[in-house]
Image (cartoon, helix red, strand yellow):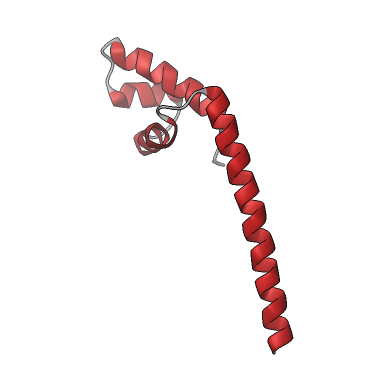
Length: 86
């Protein structure tokens, strides 16, 4: 079964649903089953996105995309320099 990749907004929405269900007395396992994610995924999401609002998450994603582009350019430059050196 292929993995589903959730956007930050979707993750925050699911975390809010989980908070409500947990406040109603449901167990973490029940909440994770309802959300369709593993407990490990829930705890990772809570650690990464727990205190964020949707607009903050969008900024977080933009910054990550910018850093990934910078890393790709740096790796390309490194590969070109290696090739020139040999």
